[in-house]
Image (cartoon, rainbow, N blue to C red; front, side):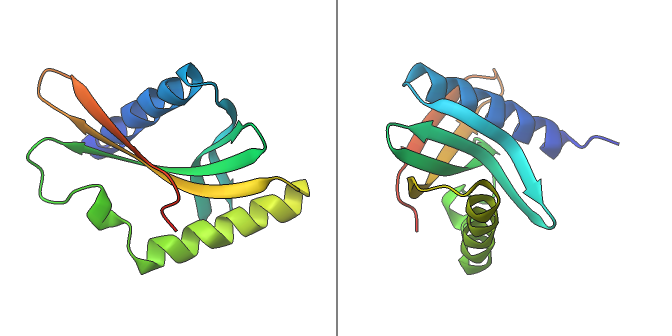
Length: 118
């Protein structure tokens, strides 16, 4: 069964992917997985690979997107990026970013892009 939260999350990743493309990012992977590690979006922009965490929330929700980036999430992002880099033998600069999306009942949204979250 697909949950409402999964639908909101998937829509947020669609929005984030399009937003990055419009700004010249090349989307390398989406929802990349290795074991228990998942990276929402891996994008290339100039000489940097961006590991992008996407958090989508409904306006007026209990927890903000920023509150969900805790120490455990940071460790998971780093380990996932390390796995990805070793599998693909990357020599690019890397960066960890957050795209926070807040949607309302009319499916309108606001995007906040935060670079270098780690």
